[in-house]
Image 1 (cartoon, rainbow, N blue to C red):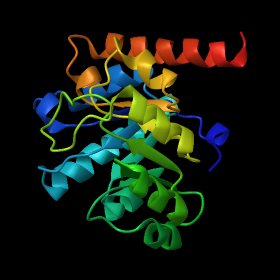
Image 2 (cartoon, rainbow, N blue to C red):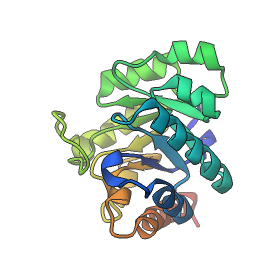
Image 3 (cartoon, one colour):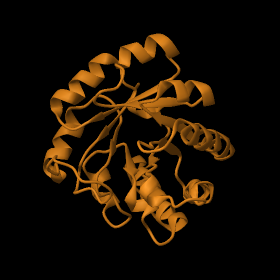
Length: 218
């Protein structure tokens, strides 16, 4: 998918650790109203019943805001709720398997961390990539070293697909991701861990809008 044809720029990745019981729909609504235009539903601890219920909530409210719903790895849930796409990573189905089952209009994202994984995902036909970690993640432990701006920039320049920057992204450092060549931002704790979800999403969205206007010469 050519870079310009993917309209989404701010991806929120869900994490149950930041979503106390009873807060899911409220926080998701705050994020979407603040400017999130893509939600990746990721819940590695929930029951299937809980996942399905939350995915249906997200399908409803993302539809209200014109945002995309991406389901992390679980293609059966993506099909059941008529999501816009899936995010694939280590241990999940391959891009080609998902494409053959769900067709060319279904968005397929791939989680990548280095040049080899980027090349593999692009060769398989992924529509977009989430590259991490740019900075040290605030939401989970990882054995992966932070890429840092220099290495991240080099990977963005070499990639042919739209890249979302993930890993320690906050309203304060979001501009660095765009300066490195990222197409968009992906965030967990930078939005869900903020004192005000709506405000954090809004600041990142405004940062993105300012950068895009600057690139367009406005």
